[in-house]
Length: 126
Ligand SMILES: [Zn+2]
Ligand SMILES: [Zn+2]
Image 1 (tube, protein in one colour):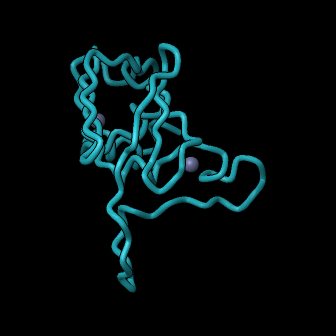
Image 2 (image 1 turned 135 degrees about the horizontal axis):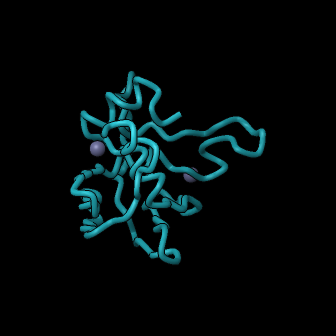
Protein backbone atom coordinates (compact mmCIF):
# COMPACT_ATOMS: atom_id res chain seq x y z
CA UNK A 1 0.00 0.00 0.00
CA UNK A 2 2.67 2.46 1.06
CA UNK A 3 5.01 1.50 -1.78
CA UNK A 4 2.37 2.23 -4.37
CA UNK A 5 1.73 5.64 -2.96
CA UNK A 6 5.39 6.54 -3.13
CA UNK A 7 5.75 5.36 -6.67
CA UNK A 8 2.85 7.33 -8.00
CA UNK A 9 2.59 10.37 -5.84
CA UNK A 10 -0.23 12.21 -7.48
CA UNK A 11 0.45 15.89 -7.14
CA UNK A 12 -3.04 17.06 -7.75
CA UNK A 13 -4.28 19.89 -5.57
CA UNK A 14 -7.93 19.90 -4.61
CA UNK A 15 -7.80 23.28 -2.96
CA UNK A 16 -5.07 25.92 -2.63
CA UNK A 17 -5.25 28.69 -0.04
CA UNK A 18 -2.79 31.51 -0.60
CA UNK A 19 -1.98 34.12 2.00
CA UNK A 20 0.62 36.61 0.81
CA UNK A 21 1.83 37.27 4.33
CA UNK A 22 1.82 33.78 5.81
CA UNK A 23 2.14 31.15 3.10
CA UNK A 24 0.33 28.52 1.10
CA UNK A 25 -1.86 25.66 2.22
CA UNK A 26 -2.78 22.87 -0.13
CA UNK A 27 -5.39 20.15 0.23
CA UNK A 28 -4.40 17.38 -2.14
CA UNK A 29 -6.88 15.18 -3.92
CA UNK A 30 -5.53 12.11 -2.18
CA UNK A 31 -6.50 13.62 1.17
CA UNK A 32 -3.06 14.87 2.15
CA UNK A 33 -2.67 18.36 3.53
CA UNK A 34 0.39 20.60 3.20
CA UNK A 35 1.09 23.85 4.97
CA UNK A 36 4.04 25.88 3.65
CA UNK A 37 5.39 28.87 5.44
CA UNK A 38 6.71 31.77 3.36
CA UNK A 39 10.27 31.26 4.55
CA UNK A 40 10.14 27.57 3.73
CA UNK A 41 8.81 28.17 0.22
CA UNK A 42 11.40 30.84 -0.46
CA UNK A 43 14.20 28.56 0.70
CA UNK A 44 12.91 25.72 -1.47
CA UNK A 45 12.75 27.88 -4.59
CA UNK A 46 13.31 25.49 -7.50
CA UNK A 47 14.81 28.03 -9.94
CA UNK A 48 18.20 27.56 -11.56
CA UNK A 49 19.80 30.39 -9.57
CA UNK A 50 18.76 29.00 -6.20
CA UNK A 51 19.59 25.40 -7.02
CA UNK A 52 22.70 26.01 -9.12
CA UNK A 53 21.19 24.08 -12.01
CA UNK A 54 23.39 25.72 -14.65
CA UNK A 55 26.61 24.72 -12.96
CA UNK A 56 26.71 27.96 -11.01
CA UNK A 57 27.06 28.13 -7.25
CA UNK A 58 23.63 27.51 -5.66
CA UNK A 59 22.35 30.67 -4.03
CA UNK A 60 19.81 29.08 -1.81
CA UNK A 61 17.94 31.51 0.39
CA UNK A 62 17.97 30.88 4.11
CA UNK A 63 14.92 32.62 5.44
CA UNK A 64 13.85 29.70 7.56
CA UNK A 65 17.21 29.28 9.29
CA UNK A 66 18.02 31.31 12.37
CA UNK A 67 20.58 34.02 11.65
CA UNK A 68 23.86 33.61 13.51
CA UNK A 69 24.21 37.39 13.47
CA UNK A 70 20.70 38.77 13.28
CA UNK A 71 20.50 41.68 10.91
CA UNK A 72 17.49 43.66 9.96
CA UNK A 73 15.69 41.94 7.12
CA UNK A 74 12.40 43.25 5.82
CA UNK A 75 9.63 40.72 6.41
CA UNK A 76 9.28 38.33 3.51
CA UNK A 77 6.02 38.47 1.60
CA UNK A 78 4.62 37.25 -1.64
CA UNK A 79 3.78 40.17 -3.89
CA UNK A 80 1.75 37.93 -6.13
CA UNK A 81 1.18 34.33 -7.06
CA UNK A 82 0.40 33.47 -10.64
CA UNK A 83 -0.81 30.14 -12.01
CA UNK A 84 1.44 28.57 -14.65
CA UNK A 85 -0.67 26.30 -16.80
CA UNK A 86 -2.38 23.53 -14.88
CA UNK A 87 0.66 22.32 -13.08
CA UNK A 88 2.49 25.09 -11.28
CA UNK A 89 2.45 28.50 -9.66
CA UNK A 90 4.97 31.29 -9.98
CA UNK A 91 5.69 33.31 -6.85
CA UNK A 92 6.79 36.94 -6.93
CA UNK A 93 8.65 37.60 -3.69
CA UNK A 94 9.00 40.90 -1.89
CA UNK A 95 12.80 40.50 -2.06
CA UNK A 96 12.58 40.85 -5.84
CA UNK A 97 12.98 37.16 -6.66
CA UNK A 98 10.48 35.76 -9.15
CA UNK A 99 12.15 33.09 -11.26
CA UNK A 100 10.89 30.14 -9.25
CA UNK A 101 8.13 28.11 -10.87
CA UNK A 102 6.71 25.87 -8.17
CA UNK A 103 5.21 22.85 -9.85
CA UNK A 104 2.69 20.95 -7.79
CA UNK A 105 5.03 17.96 -8.02
CA UNK A 106 7.76 20.04 -6.42
CA UNK A 107 5.40 21.34 -3.77
CA UNK A 108 4.21 17.88 -2.94
CA UNK A 109 7.80 16.67 -2.74
CA UNK A 110 8.81 19.43 -0.32
CA UNK A 111 5.71 19.06 1.88
CA UNK A 112 6.94 20.08 5.33
CA UNK A 113 4.67 17.79 7.34
CA UNK A 114 6.30 15.24 9.59
CA UNK A 115 5.22 12.21 7.60
CA UNK A 116 6.74 13.57 4.38
CA UNK A 117 9.85 14.74 6.16
CA UNK A 118 10.34 11.24 7.52
CA UNK A 119 9.92 9.82 4.01
CA UNK A 120 12.50 12.21 2.59
CA UNK A 121 14.94 11.20 5.28
CA UNK A 122 14.45 7.59 4.23
CA UNK A 123 15.29 8.59 0.68
CA UNK A 124 11.84 7.78 -0.64
CA UNK A 125 11.77 10.82 -2.91
CA UNK A 126 15.25 10.55 -4.34
ZN1 LIG B 1 15.02 30.99 -6.95
ZN1 LIG C 1 3.11 15.88 3.81
